[in-house]
Length: 593
Image (tube, rainbow, N blue to C red; front, side):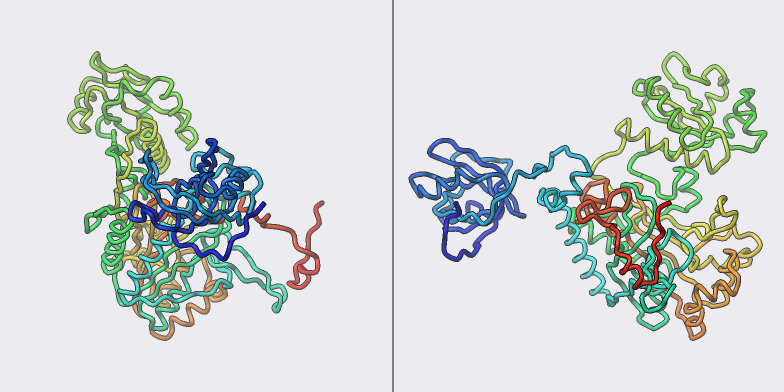
C-alpha cells in the first residue's frame, strides 16, 4: 500500500546532510539501499547520487509510516519527511555517519522487483550482465563518480579554451569517406542512390578547413567513429578534445596544452605537475623502452649488450651478430630471489607470443651466475656488464636476439609484464612525457607500401623535404604525442599548408594525382587560396578520464558503452531493419546462403 501525502518538494539530497542540519525538518527522496527491522525500529539506508543516509522509522513517531516501512525492499523509490538527529553510534565509513533522520512521513514513489544485480561497487558479475542492465549498473557510486569526473573535466576544458580565445565549432558527422586509418562507418544516402556518407574518424580535414577560413583558434569535444577491433581502451564511438590553431609552431601548441594539463590535474586530482613536461625523441623511446608510449613510472629500460658480447664464442650471440641482428635485454634490479623458474617459463611463453624464438636469461647471485646462458658468459663479459650496465648482485637479466623492431617491441612488452608481476608500478603517480621527432612514414608489410605514421596531412621537418620521394623512411615529422603512465593521451602535428607539398605527400603514399583529387579535392581546392601555417592536437577524452579516475577500462567512463563486438546489450543494437527501410536508401539485403 502506498501512503498518500501532500505534494512534496525535496529540501536536501541524502549525502548533503551533516551536524549542521541538526533538528532540521528535511524532505529526502531516493532509493532504498537496505532495510533492517529491529522490532520497534526499522533502519533504512537511503541512497541518491550524493551518497547514503540512515533513516529510522520509530513506531512511536508514526505507526502508519512504520508499518509501510516494513514493506520496503531494495531499490524501492521513496520520499520521506523527518527530523535530523545526531547519531549515538557514529559511522566513520559514511559521509553522513554523524547523523540520522527520524521519519515522520513516508511516501512510496515506486516499487521495484528484485534487481538482477546488486547496487554496490563490489558486486562480482559478468560484463554481459553489467551491460545488459546498465541502467542499474549506473546506480553504483563508482560509476556515478566517474561520470561526474568526466563532466567536471569537460567543464575545465571548455573554460580553459574560452579563456584563451578559442571558438567552439561543431563539425559535421555525415562526411565524405576518405582513406587511411580504420574502417569507416558508412551511412547510405536516401537522396543520392548508391552513395554513402562516412561517420568521421576525426574532424581532421574539417578543422583544417576552419583554419583556411580564418577562424584562428578552434576546439570541440567531439564524437568520433572507427570500425576497428576493440579492446579495453577502445570503443567504436569515442570522444576527443579536438584543437586547431593558426600561425603557430610546435612550441606554441605544446606550451598552451601543458598549461591545460596543469589545471586539469590540479583541479581534479589536486596534484601539481612540473612544467615544462619532459620530452623524449621517438628513436630514444623505442631504443630504451620499446614503445612510443613508454611507462616511466618505474626505472627499467632496454640495454644494448652488443658491446659486451662483441667477442663472444656463444653461438646464440655470435650468430646474431653475423646476421646483423641486435642483442638487447632487460636488467631487472634486485629480483633474483623474486623471479622463480616457473615465472621465467611464463615469460618465455609470453615473448614467443610476440614472435620471439626464445628468451635467454641468467641471475647474478652471491655464488656466481645461474640460468640458461650462465655457463657461456666469460669473466670479462661479466665485468663489462658490471661497469657499463650497472649489473649488481641480486639482478636478473633477460636477453633477446632478432631483428631490431621485433626485439624492441617484445622487450617493451616484457618490461611491462615484469613490472606488473613484481608490483614495480607505483600507484597515484603520473609520469608524463612528450614524444617528438616521429618518423613521417611507417612501412606496412601487408600492403607493401609506406603509410602515414600519424596522418597524410602532417608536415615534414624542413631539412628532410628533399628525402620525401627518394628515402621516405628517413623523413621526420613535425608531430608530438603526450604520454602519461604508458598511454597516449593526446597527439598532434603541424600540418601541411601548401598544395604542392600536400601533393608530394600523397605521391609518397602511393596516391596518383587523380586519386588525390577524387578523395581530397575539396582540401586541395581550398589550398589554392592562401593557407596559414597551422597545427593542432587531439586528446583522448575517454582515456584522460580513465587516467583521472584510476580505471583501466574505457567502459567505466562511458555511460552506455558497447561490448567487445561493438554491440549494445541494453538496446539490442545493431539490429535488423525492414526491407522497406533498406529500399528507401537503395540498399539490397544479401540473404544468408
